[in-house]
Length: 357
Image 1: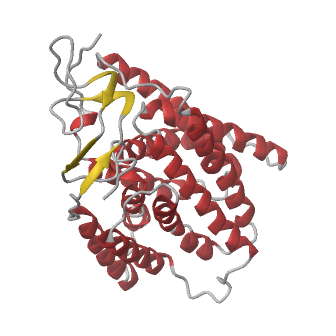
Image 2 (image 1 turned 180 degrees about the horizontal axis):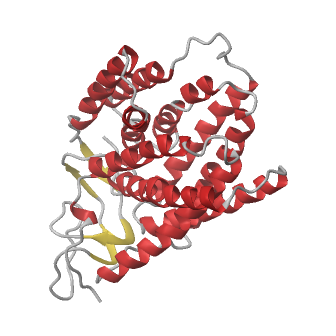
């Protein structure tokens, strides 16, 4: 049965989803500073992710109740990619980061975490065949330079070490997570986020107890849960939704603006005057975003035949199939894409998994 009605999520521009993800995640930085010294880092990660799973479960139920047609749920074909995402981004990367935090200066950690966008882009191009042109590499270089400037500290103790190598390795695993999630981004983002965050939260909780750390009080826990719902949970939903249409590299580069958003909000909350370092870095960020937003990419490319199921609407350059009855707005059903060669402006989203010039 095919039916549907207009859906809000499909009407939003993909860069808006990526920008919203960055904004929400950026807000979390100054908010979490309030808990500094009150909650151990591992417990904090646990409650942030558990808050995400709890809140997004409820939000997903509300969204589904308002829609006549639901997003397609991850199926058995998606399990391998989901497991890769959970293990790399929800288990291995956080453990590496936590282990590295104890032996690495905070300034170095902040600087090196910007490597995630680089790792995501390189992996997207090298392993996942995502097409990345000169403009995207230029945007990545500019935004990376801005991030380095924003987080740079002249502290002589901020050099590379085994701990710093651990942070870089964590970024690589987060890059793997981003690319693996992109492979299943056509499915329900709420289901994906709940599965990933619950798994990560449980692992972090077990690690905290195994490290012998003391559980925090009820107020810090509630605060962390709330921040997890809105700043982590919604951010992850929007991030997955952006992956669907933009691909891993472009979404990751947009998301790398989060530190700037956190810095700007910190200036307001803590009543600080922006220095020359922040002003120059913000200018570089703006230039990088402009490079991304003005990208034009419409080569002749080949689509292989594929049959799958996801929420979509007509008219659409990739959805020209027939229906047994009238349909409008967002709808979901198993449909087939025939092999085709064509040209249109696009990003490497879910319908451009494999292309040949």
